[in-house]
Length: 365
Image (cartoon, rainbow, N blue to C red; front, side, top):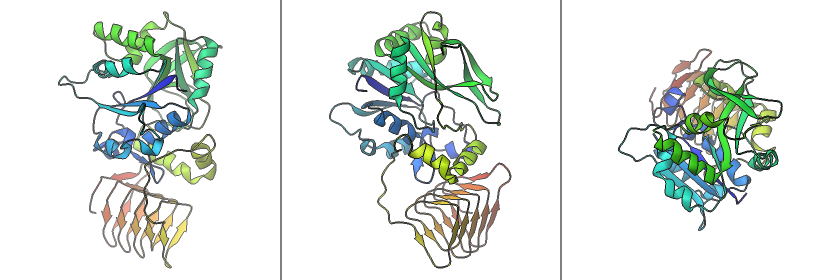
């Protein structure tokens, strides 16, 4: 899809993961033992043939920049096109994504692609955007909005779409408390780049700053706005509880297969550490263990990221331990999430409730 440029729009994303987004944007939150949430969007772009990707970052993006680097792991370190990062740098307070887009107007104007695909950086999905492009052309649409039916029981707030029998968008509800079966807009849209630029300029000059609300929703009657129903596996992550639950679902090999392998691989930053080491006293059951881990204790129904050390006699159950965590001898952990570099002392007991307890990055407990 050399005709399409990709944009990862982080400006309007909600940081809804508590301490996990205290020092990082949601797109750079670790997921699945070795990935970051943004890896899914980048991988989807690349395997769909998108070679020009712009990342519009707003807040707490240092860890994101460190993770992305030159874009090598996603084959985006290129002489032509590649990965472009546009942090928000205006002296004015942030008003909306249109302001950020407008400040980088030259990036869009000099890009040679005919179409533009804008999405978020924290959607966990495996999609081939070529199918979206084909349907967009087939329907003769001006704008295509991607949506997913909401299948979770947990209450959440999203934009929703009302579509007719031909998938044409009839109405949009903003910030709606969703129920099962509602069509949740995935903050992902496709259109010609020329239309995107025209709408951006027009809306900006009117003093409005949210692209979806003020440029797309406000013009539903003026353009053919088509819906595209994504029917693949996609967890809605909008809280610590949903993050934990969907992380734990990865222990189901069917979910793991759907998300990471069935529709192409998900790529991430390469780490050349040693394989995980299981010592004689270790017991590991139904868990994801990343490379570089050293296990002497017991790990059950848990996810351990790279470089985690579990000392002798320690027990970890139903928990997520992020990079370089260290669990002291005889410690007991149940239903907790430990951010990066957390050290747990000898014989310490940490237990969460139905909603797991999160311990902040670099804590010493």
